[in-house]
Image 1: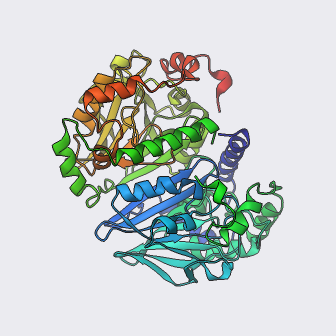
Image 2 (image 1 turned 135 degrees about the vertical axis):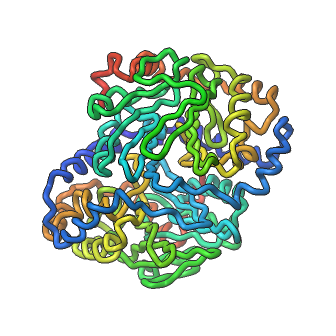
Length: 287
Length: 287
């Protein structure tokens, strides 16, 4: 772990700890109270017949998710990383799966997507991204669309604020949300930055509260990144302990305006590549 | 991710890929055949009422596992890392849990255990390690013992070979093994090294095949480390794809004799500390 990353992790931990002692003043306080009483007692279960693997890129701290139907073997990958496509393909082959979609939650600035490489290796695979992202993809989706694989499906929610095209993919079981893949909209005890691409703190606050933190408190939330070694959270936890999103909107915007984060080191390579499934002048970078 | 780590990861991926094309000649071949037909279709579910979190240390590539009972809130941590105790304690507090045990799978050589620090912060916490390890702990366990928290329990299996005191903790649901925490005995598409401490390749081979890979093919296996960003595997996958353990015993021993791994950089600090719950001359290293 790099020194910078360890500092980030330590800061995040401290920030999270401090947040537990701060009284919640945001307009969603009643929901917070309900969640705090229930979320630790009734955690969701994974959907029946779902194969699920969480994968990590130790360079960009990105989580890639493999989901598949046990019966039909149809599989999707959420947020694959180009350097790790071989790892992901090995796992897909080992589990005897058929990759049907490579989904991106948004146009990433910190790594190049593996969508294009996956399409080369799995002819059944189609790339998916938000239609408002402006990126090239086989399937362009919008709010309310559904991505199906076997008996399972992911519902598409538009959750802009980090970028205009940010999506959250939600999986339901018996009509109830049980898992959501939040991209950079919501991170564990944090959220994506809003100071580049089409970032907008006000929009992010409204989208996260209105569409993600309004899911059942037991819903598992799987982010696109974590810098502290955590793998998952729940709606209930973030409603109670997210050090930024438990604040009111004005306080949230002030926090986001004062993060003073460095220029993303991979952005100049990643953005143009990610607008075309990761295959723009990146041949020399393949893993 | 360091250059060395990325090289290790790349090698592991290549090794795993090659293994898929090698015919299996080990004495467990009949079991492999059965597993290959079934393991991808019938994955285990998590036990009802279990809170489960997988946590990662990006410096030593160690996985720490938090398991707890939803009703009683009693919790255990498997293989905590001293620098990340504050992260783990924050999560335990956020989830309103009561830590009752800090378990170590063995005397680690690559990081210092967080057991001692956890005991300082949670007076209810007792440290646990194998009695044959020679280490100090509140509870010393052996083959067949059980560690209980709420309605859940972990059965202790003695799985030496990486060290004499290596343990695997197995969780059952309705009498069937569903999860096993394998420490360094079995890693995803790999295994722990056998060239220091009390390492013995022959013993490791027998223990892993006899006690871990003989569990049901659907059993989830959670290792103490992964260097490739993978988080979990199953008995069925390792029976079919583990590039070392699908070999016969003589071939396995030859592989292990020729790994030519570097001297573990943290061993001189970690071993004396881990023999006393991680609190030996490590005050300056606390996270």
